[in-house]
Image 1 (cartoon, rainbow, N blue to C red):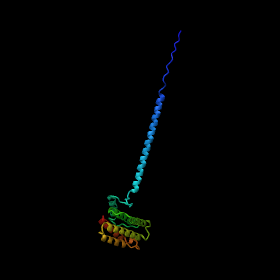
Image 2 (cartoon, one colour):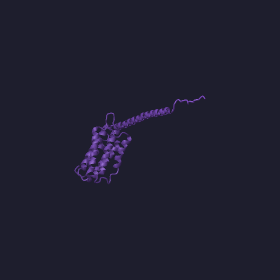
Image 3 (cartoon, helix red, strand yellow):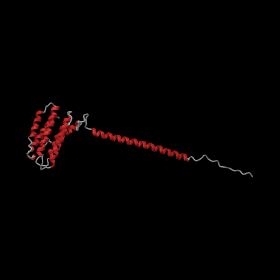
Image 4 (tube, one colour):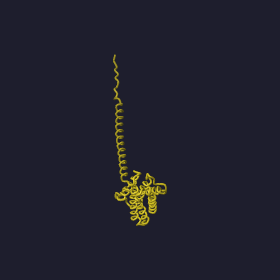
Length: 219
């Protein structure tokens, strides 16, 4: 009897290796794309941070490397208004801690710089040095309430502020406030270095009042 042998036809192979291979290839492409995208984001963030840092350094510096602290009208108005508000009512001020004199001198110096910059005058090294000295003197009178040289330091600060305002008047106003500034100089000189500040409160107040008048007329 004849034997019939039936052989199974071999298939062409499984397709799963191809599917797995394609998946691996797809994952590899996706991973490379993500890596490039993250690299771009990091670079963008670094550029933005660099731009911010440069802007921070450049703020307040003009083309001639002159420093400007009060760049807008609001900055200027705020600096002047702060001094006017502090010295609006000086009755009962000027205690042993000298906090009022410290605040008034500091704000007056800053208002003077703001006035100069608002009138288009550059804050040169000489003016900035005077401002720094005034602020240092105003800080010194707070350190030791019992020291006997507070009046001397207040007088020195007052004279430097007067000189700055005189320079502004000459350069921006052609000396129109000369009379008011002459009175301001007299008030500054009336502060006696050898006398305790608490014994000449009215002389110090008179200087601050006259400075108010000068600022209001020159503003």
